[in-house]
Length: 163
Image (tube, rainbow, N blue to C red; front, side, top):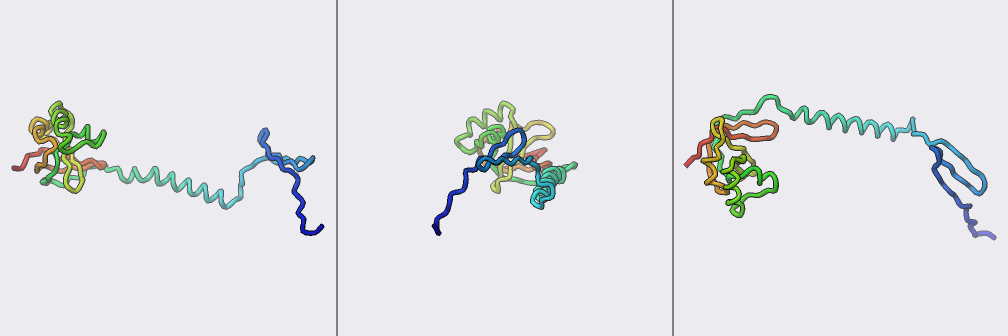
């Protein structure tokens, strides 16, 4: 009968002891599973992995700066932050003012977030500036100080509050 398609015999595939066995009816063919040694796709995969590893290892080394970048005296206006709560769970603003004042008064790091979103760690002349800044928690103030940046961290040191 023309036009009828005969079904193919059942095929079973199993993996036993590192070999791939394919069974057609009663005949078994066993071939070891080996990597495609001469395959262009395998070479491309290894090249991609090597390039990714080089970038992953090289970029942090290129980004690490041995000497701090000093911009000298600057004046910055922004919101006084309790850095612990800000970094931990993004707390800032008037709703967080009381907690920020408590945390800053207790000695936790204090910072300033400018209108452009840049955050600065604030310190006095080689000492904390917490006592003078606690009363300004969650308020907008202007400070003047020496800007130093290293590894993505911005520090305003020797700060003075500008009236």
